[in-house]
Image 1: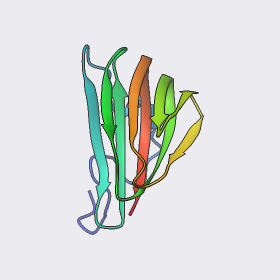
Image 2 (image 1 turned 90 degrees about the vertical axis):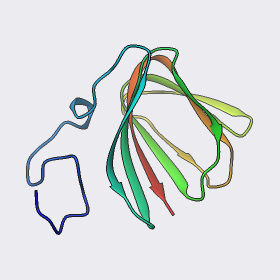
Image 3 (image 1 turned 120 degrees about the vertical axis):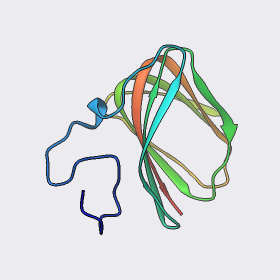
Image 4 (image 1 turned 135 degrees about the horizontal axis):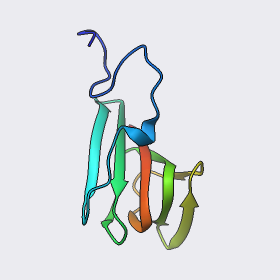
Length: 112
């Protein structure tokens, strides 16, 4: 890996399928951080069916893109069901939660 790269845990200068970069694990939410700094965070997640991240808020705007399966996202008082290829923006300081309607994977981008 290039020591100057801001990315980690992923091969550089190679075509990758993001949904293959994080595996499902029974009864778990799995995360793989690709970038974490004061400006941006990029994290891959896999959720087993029924697993969740409870309501919380962030100091940055969060964009999720579902890579596989179906997830439920609650933003404030609204719920959204997203499937592969769909994206949702969760504004900063608004409580949000994530739930695995079925097994699903997502890429989370947070811009601070």
